[in-house]
Length: 105
Image 1 (tube, one colour):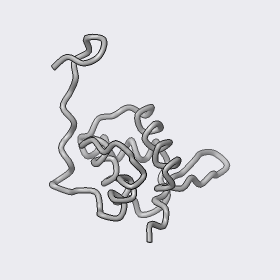
Image 2 (cartoon, helix red, strand yellow):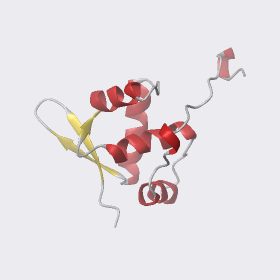
Image 3 (cartoon, rainbow, N blue to C red):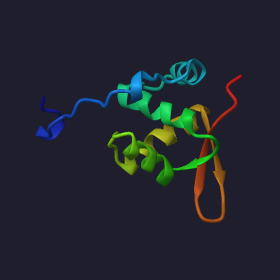
Image 4 (cartoon, rainbow, N blue to C red):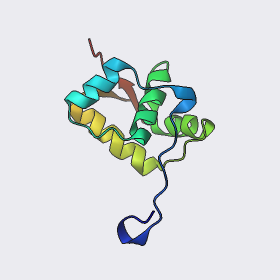
C-alpha cells in the first residue's frame, strides 16, 4: 500500500503476545483525544511494563527486543502527546529525561 509521497506503508506491528494496553492508561488516552493506532497501543504496553521511570533510549531498546521497530523521533512525538494529555510525567535528571505513567486514579 502506498502512502504520502509514494512511500511504502508498513502494517502496524502486532501487540506483544496478545497484550493490550491496560484500561486506565488506554481510557486516559482516549479521554484526552489521542489517536490510538495499533502501533501506539503497542507503545503503551511497553510503558505499562516498565517498572519505573524510563528514558527514550531504554524504551527504544525494549521495543527492539520485542521485535517492534519504530524511530526515536516517533517515540519523542508520542511521548510529547502523552505529556500534553497529562498521561505521563517527565522526570529530569542530570543527564537525561525519564518518563513515567501518571497516577491515573
